[in-house]
Amino acid sequence: MALWATIRGLLELTRPINVIAASMLTFLGAYVAGGVVESPINVGSAIAATALAVGAGNAVNDYFDREIDRINQPRRAIPRGAVSPRGALLFSGVLFALAVGFAVTLPRLAIAIAGINLLALISYTEWFKGLPGVGNALVAYLVGSTFLFGGAAVGDVWATVVLFVLAAVSTLTREIIKDVEDIDGDREEGLRTLPIAIGERRSLQVATLLLLIAVIASPLPYFTHEFGVAYLALVIPADVVMLYAAYESFDDPTAGQSHLKYGMFLAVLAFIVGRATGSF
Image 1 (cartoon, one colour):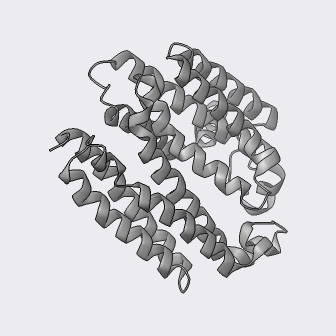
Image 2 (tube, one colour):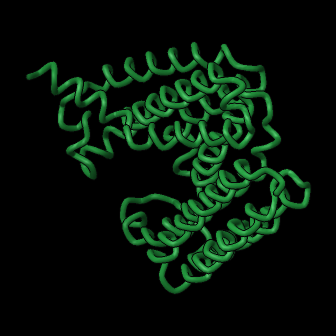
């Protein structure tokens, strides 16, 4: 029973749902770049590296957050005693090493992206999480970069640049809106989020401006003839949903960040359909 409790605790440290989601984004990046069929081994290595790195990053974050979690999240693996802090740190190190092992088999640009992401995952909680806006931006980059990593793994990172921008900026917008939603609790815990540092309304204005820039960039694959009308027919409604969500967040941050997520999913679907239909 003790062994099973430890195994379960280690699995919880990785946040399996996050691992699966990140792996799917890497696959979609490779698919949008058109390399799934041509480079299946590289795609598999990229997915494995992503899954292992995300799991390792989540585990090391729980290690650094262990004292806060004893108060706010006592049922997590380390606070409840299923995994020791030293065990969590060693486990994350093993996962990081395995992730590096898969990543080094990929093209050089993919290796570079993997190296930057590994450093970001390790440093997020200890150095950047508490800086207003910086932690949000780092999370946004990491989400968007999974598409870049998938594209770089199959040798065509440029095909995923617009998707990276849309995913990163929409994630950043959503992270800021979530901070506005959680401002009372964050203030009580002594956190210094962007809304606490510069105010709720100004934070939402910054988030909306960033999203507007991404929306303006979203039709580029159509104008460069990489994707056709089918892409445009889906990305425009996605843009509308995301812009409405940003507007809605000024009155209702909870509804705004929830609806923004729908727009993000629709934007990803636009890229999938765009790749499937080509320039038609």
